[in-house]
Length: 240
Image (tube, rainbow, N blue to C red):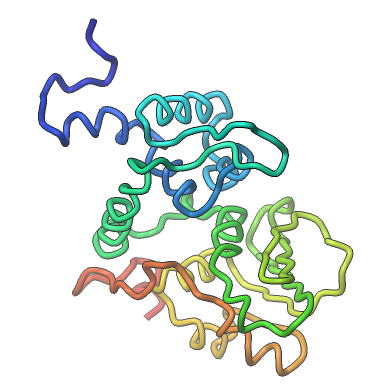
């Protein structure tokens, strides 16, 4: 019986595409490669997918031998881990993402999700550069819907937690900006220092922490890859 989504070719690329080119699949694998091991964390990294569909995609990855579910399972044990086949997808995804950083279309307004931006940021903070003890960063988006206007990053003992409500600790730094500005800084499209000097990103708190803040942000793993030559992102170009 023909398999749904099959290309009816024995080419290895066609066979791999049967699994990997299903909608949301590469983003799910991206989250697994980034260290997500539980259903809830995977979904926070891919917020647009329905829970039932995410479960179906994870089942497909398990049948394909790309992930497995360790036994026994428990509250503090991972629910999903990459197999050797899944680990081999790391450089594949890195290559696709690098291509996307250089050649894919510009960021559109509908791409801008403040919650996802903060979620991806929390995995790329240089906690070694932060002061000892707990550091709380409040991020305020002046142009986001009311329910996505403020987030808190609580950094302690090398771990970073994203809070959607005030965490109950004093805030050390408050970062206020627009979603697009911070997203384009994170992507490497805008220089962070320039945006701070221009007032597009406002950092409030003790002087020592304000000065150190840029060193805390590792940015996207692909931020160093320059966009395609000769073409500026339309929103940056319109401001020049």
